Image (cartoon, rainbow, N blue to C red; front, side):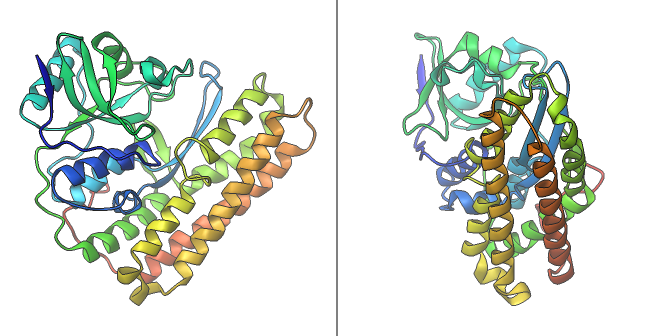
Length: 347
């Protein structure tokens, strides 16, 4: 049996998570840009992981926690977190059951096991939308931000991709099915709530299974960078950091320019509270992140290391100061919005 969700359409985009929720939006009749989806999900964040068993041993992630969940809650979807399943066979059967009902499912997957990437690097934080399957070919059909057409993943590799235990983000068939999106009627309120929520998350910190994301983690990273010169894998850690900041679906500046574009599109709702400074500040923060990415690219291509990590540390501290000032200004100027997307601080 072959089944593709009736009426499913995919558009190639920039970032895996925001493309996935954008595709789901379009499926349910909400025509939003990818940048708007990212912003409504309060998508900015910063994680930093250190583990000698990781490859590389130091990994940053400039995206925020639960972006897809935040976005869906903004639309009134009753979901608090990703759902997990330890039984791989049950997880695969569940995907088919939802597809049979024309219900798209967002999943987290390790790109190392997605055949169409042809990658040997583990990255279990990749998000795709599962929209079909074919029993005769033993494949699932998925929508992935980097590709115009639907891609296929074998049943076997899908199980491996969804249950990968690669650090720092081990998976347990993480998923969220989206059976409807009937809310989202007051876009202005959704925007205001999401912008304030992102500021709260960055200043207060949010801890999930991935670790803690916050502005203060940027400061911790800045301080730790002084010791990167002593890492056995300093070249690879630096190259991977450059890729995460500039190349891996982040719009060139650790998502900050991507978020800037959201702020520009959302200016009709934001300008009464903050004016144009908000957009200009985020553009400047994005430039600092871009400079950081270029620096790490240079470090990764160096034959030896000198004071480069000291420069990186100083630049990271500049970013920390700018982001703390930006998010503090948001909380000072924006009203508290009680909406369906509000996430309790205890979560």
